[in-house]
Amino acid sequence: MKERTLSIIKPDCVSAHNAGKVIDILESNGFSIIAMKKIHLTKKQAEGFYIVHKERPFYDSLTTFMSEGPVVVMVLEKDNAIADYRELMGATNPKDAKEGTLREQFATDIERNAVHGSDSKESADFEIGYFFSALELV
Ligand code: ATP
Ligand code: MG
Image (cartoon, rainbow, N blue to C red; front, side, top):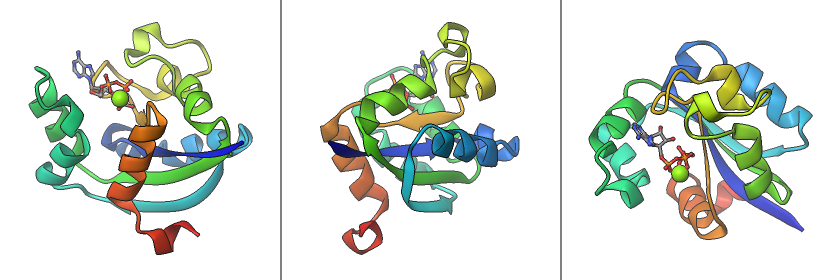
């Protein structure tokens, strides 16, 4: 069944000029781009996006990183998109990411890890709605 997930190319990956390579890999792996925008998040907008992590020790550092420069935000669609995109991203820590995954290729460390992907249907619904209105998702 077709499913949608939210992808973010994080500031480290955009500033390294690797956004196009990531998009190429996504399309080569069967993901369709339903909506896409490049934006520079404020600290507050990054905090709102990662609100589930607000009690974590890395929350302040993570949201500072996510607001340091522009990101590319996309809604991706394919069968089993949420799990398949998590697999294509690789482990949170690039040291543990399998060869060929996005994080193995483009991440620097556990924080500056190149890409984000929704981790469940509930997260995907919240995250897609955080960035895109219904009219942008037809
Ligand atoms: P994302 O939600 O960005 O797709 P993830 O689901 O693999 O990543 P989470 O546990 O949700 O990992 O953490 C969110 C983000 O917070 C990570 O992608 C990373 O940028 C940062 N992060 C996670 N753990 C740490 C840590 N121990 N130290 C620093 N930053 C971290
Ligand atoms: Mg996560």
